[in-house]
Every structure is written in structure tokens, then in C-alpha cells.
Amino acid sequence: MQKKYNKANAVAKAVKPEVKETVQEAAKTVEAVAEKVETAAAKTVEKVEEKAEAAVEAAEKKTEEVKKTVKKSAKKTTAKKEKEAAKTDIVLQYQSVETSLVSLEDKVKAQFVAEGHRAGCIRTLNIYVKPEEYKAYYVINDKFSGSVDLF
Image (cartoon, rainbow, N blue to C red; front, side, top):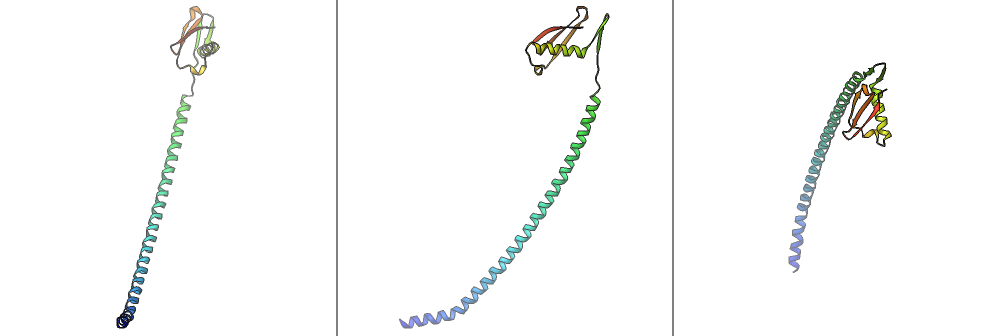
């Protein structure tokens, strides 16, 4: 048995240098692969950062465009409001008295509220003027009706 053990030691001694070389070569290969992976990862990170920066720049440009569009739209809306600002006042004259139709509308709304309704619930308001009776008749929301004095 001693002989087999000695042969095994001799083979082990002979193999050890080869194994060491193989392990060292494997370690070098692993290091080389690790460097390549590290380099590739760094390049990927750089590309992602570049794309992120490009996306941020594009978003900033779009934001500026939207702001400009909003400003233009606001100017147009303001201009339209200024054009619509002209008011018309219609005055009804009958015999020797007169009344403004705006004040007549206010009288109708005041009476409607005095009857216990809310002014905010008025959706439609139809006023019928009968100067010969000195009355204005009204219908609100196709449900409520009444009359007010014209003068």
C-alpha cells in the first residue's frame, strides 16, 4: 500500500505545477472578462446618461413651446373678451315714461328671489313686455311665472 501512496504523491507533485498554471491562467481570463464587462457597463451608463440628457432637453423644449402656445391662447382669449366688452342698454319708452330693460331684468330676478328661490338656479329667463298694461310678464326655467310693474 505504501507503493500506491508514493505513486500518488509523485503524480500529485507533478500535477501541482500544471494545476497552478491552469488556475493562474483562469484567474487572468476572469480578470480580463471582468475588465471587459466593466468597460461595457461604463459605456452603457454613458449612453443611458446621454439619452436621459437628450430626453430632458426635448422635454424642456416642449415645455417652452407649450408655454408660448398658452401665452398666445391667453392673448387671443383676452382680445376676444375685450371685443365682447361692449354692452347694449335698451330703453323702453311708452307715453311719458321710460325704463331700461336691464333694470327690468333686475326687477324680475329680485322678485323671483323674494318668492324664496335662489338666483343661481335661473337657467332661462323670458320676459314679455306689455306697455299698455304697464306690466312685464316673465317665465323662468319654463316652470315659474309672474309679473312686475314696468315703471
